[in-house]
Amino acid sequence: MADEAEVEQPAVPAGEGAQTPALSKSARKKLQKQERQAERKASRKAAEKERRRADVERRRREWEEALAAAPSDEARAEMVAARRETRRERVGRRAEERGARAERLRRAAEGAGQKVVLDLEFADLMRPNEIHSLTQQIMYCYAVNGRSANPAHLWLTGCSGEMATHLQRIPGYDKWTIEKAAKPYLEAFEDRKGNLVYLTADAETVLDDLDMSKIYIIGGLVDRNRWKGITLKKAAEQGIQSAKLPIVNYLKMSSSQVLTVNQVFEIMLKFVETRDWKTAFFHVIPQRKRGEAEAGDDEAKVSLDNNGDAAEGTPNGDLSEEDLKKFFDGELDDGGDKELEDEETDMSNKRQCVRREDAGAGDQDHPGAVAEATPAGVEATAQAEQAKESNDGGED
Image 1 (tube, rainbow, N blue to C red):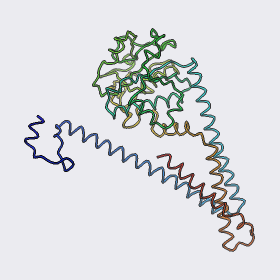
Image 2 (image 1 turned 45 degrees about the vertical axis):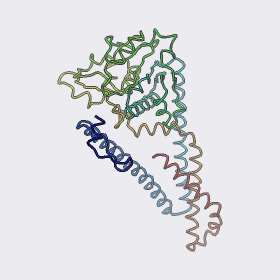
Image 3 (image 1 turned 120 degrees about the vertical axis):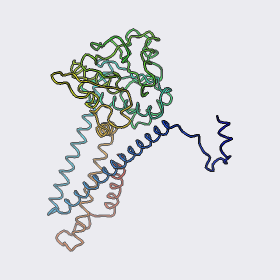
Image 4 (image 1 turned 135 degrees about the vertical axis):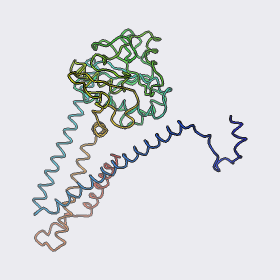
């Protein structure tokens, strides 16, 4: 076919409009859909970026106007002190939350948490956008685990190659309180193979309870249903147990029982917390997938596919992208005290500038105001503004 194409098409020098092979109708539709999705995603990201910038600028402008409108230096000093105290309290709360989260995760790793493994050995079966989707789902798993009162002892195994490259791009990934292993789970748990249980919707065994002595494996695969039954086959070939969540006992299924990675993980966390599968399912599985509850029956029809929802938005309907961003901002916010110092310097020097303006306008009652606004003070103000702009840019 390639030879025929060369005969039919006139020769075109490389780099001068050389034609690519024509796509089929279905391939063109798929490409157009992907392009539309990429455009929508870029548009949403740009709009959110602009909204954040506008919000930051609005708050800054309102504060400056309020400061300038203060009736006296004493009133301005009180405003600055109150703002400083509020910010100090917020920084303190963040530090406490980080400490409490680290302690919970530490206890989970020492044996208090249910052992859960995310099997990342399927990267070679996924397309780049599917690996990106899985990376997003792993981020949600880590964020939800950190927020949980009873976190799991979470493992990433088979974490190598392209999968590891994607994960390394996550800001602060190296600081995650999580077990990471490039080797497969069979090697990581070679002395506990009998305790391994692969969770797969194709298994015959239904999971009635979670056993703390077991190590539950969730397949890290986003495949749009191209590789049906692959996780069950893998478990059978390796001679390890397999089981599925008891979805059919609580929800009436209309098609597949496959869930995204983060949904399965959060269901397990919720069950550990409540010891109630029904509560866990209805808390995690989005209403759009569950359908409408039947009259006189608490069960609902549901169609679940591992179609990579995380790539387009919230993968579980519970933790939004904004929540995720706030979580990782807190996880990485080790410079809270420095930020507070910058804010204090900024506010102090703005007050000095206001006083200098008042003095320059002919206010002879405060002759020392001009002396306070020294060149060093002006320089500190500029540095503080640059630091704030840098921090604002970090949210992009």
